[in-house]
Image 1 (spheres, helix red, strand yellow):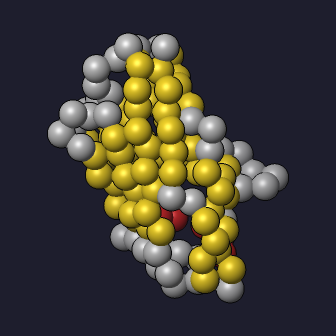
Image 2 (tube, helix red, strand yellow; image 1 turned 180 degrees about the vertical axis):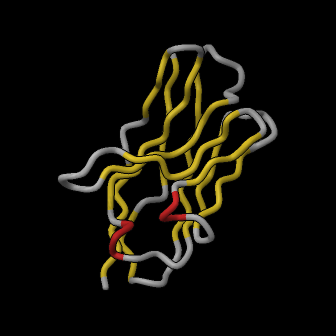
Length: 114
């Protein structure tokens, strides 16, 4: 079993920054496929930033503002979010893929006020 523990959400003003963290634990030693999605009220869940092996992918709306990083053990990922805007308000979910199985964290709320 895999557990993903997220932290770092909160409420900020537009233009400010937040850093999210996701720590994986369980029977898997490392996670080559791991990253972040988000879901705003009334909208579908969307990709924010993701590691696919050694590659990174970003959602179009966050490119240039958000940066994903990870530890050398491939078990923790961080999401540095700069220049936050009200449209970034959402629940942010950590995701890890192992084969065909998706694991999700419980989500952390990010609220950006104007």
